[in-house]
Image (tube, rainbow, N blue to C red; front, top):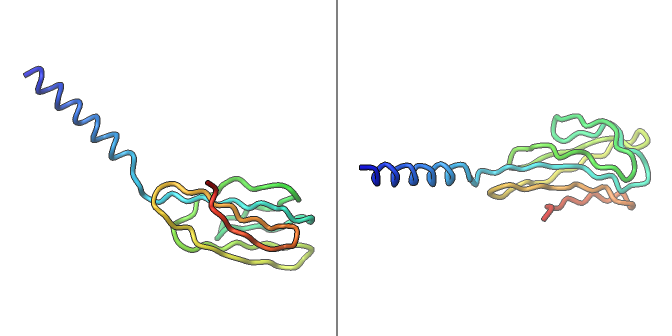
Length: 109
């Protein structure tokens, strides 16, 4: 009887560990300003992030799997963009506005 209880507890422990290691998508995105000017009114989807000085990055913000949008202004001119966050498990993405004001989205590995 004692052996059966021990086996049951060990099995329950393994099942609880495996169920907590879910491969449900968990995506987060940050914006990095590599441009020479300040980015203002920065948003990811509907999350307002504020001002981003040159060389600075936002904290990672959670997003749902699928498409996302970001926007802001530079010297009063609007910029917008978007991308797609997909994949099972945990993923972190960085949207970089580079020196040429090109917008690059890549997964951090």
